[in-house]
Image (tube, rainbow, N blue to C red):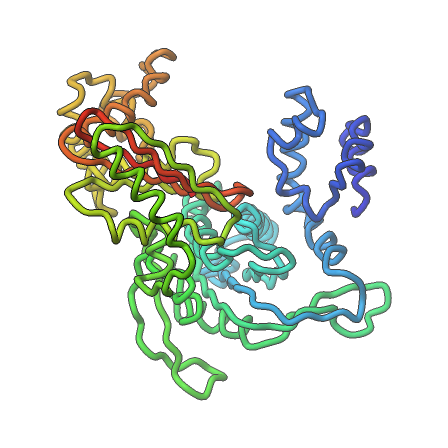
Length: 462
């Protein structure tokens, strides 16, 4: 289906067709709509918005995005050279599954597996290109490109592995995943009459398939290009130069273990390789003067704003190099991957301050959280409230269920975070930075310097 009006009519919501048309909403952008976007479009009914969001989520399952992607990729005889990241997912033990299960049951298992793959891949902005039996090939960077396609691909792979754990199938399904990044040529393949088939030409899809064969059960193997783009956003295990069928020379390969605990996405992606800063002395000196005044007791606020990529984070890095004295620097990063969690930047900072480790059990995490919060509150309810914000595996991992917290108690989460930050600033200068990225169109960097007679606060939003 390529007609947005027909799609709305099928849902019984054709009354909104005119608003969709006036705002140029078609299948190339509809998957990016949020509840707030629908409300701005004039869909006032909460029930209608929920119905639309459910229908939008189903688009990826019936392969409508494939048709729409062709529509967005322009017409026949057009080809373009671009960088994409390819993910190849292969179901482990599919032959054994076919032996143990009736063909109809096997078909149901494979269909469920395909739906799970499509849901996670499309959730992170990818496009499912092919279903090859028990294999799935998807592209990130085509037909729609993002600045962080390599990161999105790896996060989709990790999310898929986790999602398969809870899949309602007769047996636990496991996958092997290969990911590669490189230049390809995309375009329609051959003169196929009325059939339009996308072709992606280059070594990258083949490399992703070969890397998948090197992966173990429930693991992800990536190539050197992807590793370079990811920086220190994840933890890796180097596999060394490996022989890959079809390639003359051994290739570097890495296994992705887990997301890393990084304080700064900017530093993780640049890995210390910063180019010289040119022509920003005036802005840097202005912020340093405000910082000096704040340290001497005068409250100051500095807002640094600009378009994505203009260099706000680079300026903040340069300012930090010039700050003198003892101070605490806190950085908070938003991400398009966690946009459904409003407090996620504060939660991540809390986890770092508590010293959470990837291998910590829930009980150990709770002990660390209690030790961190002991200085600001003796209330068990406060500890449970903040523990409920942290990503414990399941509510039962927390000894006292947070379901007993009242609605008013849940509202105390923000004051708890504020009290914790105020405590950290009680014995030294305090620099606070918040970075907003991804779906937020306009990024901001600001520095708030606040005096308590002795302290300075810096608030940076980028």
